[in-house]
Image 1 (cartoon, rainbow over the protein chains, first blue to last red):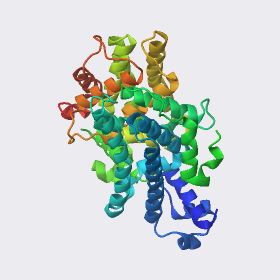
Image 2 (cartoon, chains in turn red, yellow; image 1 turned 120 degrees about the vertical axis):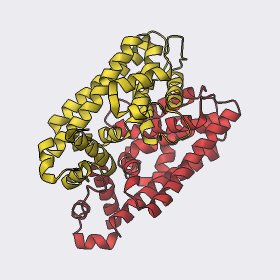
Image 3 (cartoon, rainbow over the protein chains, first blue to last red; image 1 turned 45 degrees about the horizontal axis):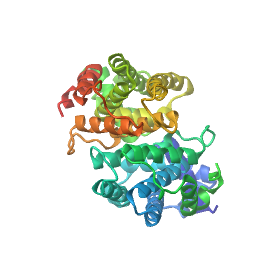
Image 4 (tube, chains in turn brown, purple; image 1 turned 60 degrees about the horizontal axis):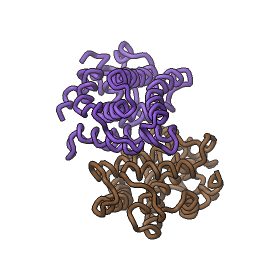
Length: 217
Length: 217
């Protein structure tokens, strides 16, 4: 990992553990193995670093979401894929998830709009799958908007409790979420639904070496 | 509201908005309308204040959970009640939820154990309802432990997106979550299930004046 990568990794860990405001420049330099002076060669402001972390993280989710939908167009198979990809990606990127979830408030409004636009693009995929499934009679829900928010909270939440040292394999957790997510919409997995292992590989491809070591878990 | 109450309210807002580490003593004093010197008459350390906020918040959830289960013993009715109470309580206590969720990491280990014990007591109620319902054949899930975590993440998540200015009434959101939560467990609301209005009133009673003004929403 080069110096830029070390700075980014240190920032993700520190922002997740101590918050953006709780992280000092000197700590960031220490964690990246750089002096405070040389740190400025590798980053702009602390806020630039935060924006980049969020844009990279949400950009990968958007890319992975497009791949899921390109493979599985029918609502039941698409929802099965979005749930499993989202669960695997968040379980393997716990620190990034905490930073994206908690630190939107720390961005100035211009930066916030760019990050929110990416998040909206991603959530739009979930919206169209859920609304399309309701229109086609594949899903039955009290309120498609509330169902989208509830599914996203349930699946993102895995980042807050998953441990690679726990009793359950990640693929089992992803698969249980897909089954429960479809049940929430009064649907059941069908023959077009791909298994969890497929989405573990998809996440490893989109996220790259950062998550690869844990993918066998 | 007396000075202690003003200090507590200011701390909840500031810890939620800027994080525990990001909140300075002087800001806390300013927000509570006190001088930094007189602030120390009304609080111990900043960590004591955080522990108290978490214990009060989790203590109310435990009390409300016991009331729900005392009224509704059968698994379907009990789950309907826990989901609705939890959604209403978290939607009306957004800042407290953010503090409880994010700042456990900021507690020293002795304080953390006391807070975690309360959280475990509350989650134990969900565990026994879900496991009891599976044993009785009322619920069918791939994994009762994953189902508990998924339901809690889904219901707590309402605190992160609910707005009293939004299109949906809180009672409708609570009721949609109960319907989807039961569907996740392959169950459907039955005649023993109490409506959302009941749980809005229960939360208003347990939480008291802090949430009362918004309860009509």
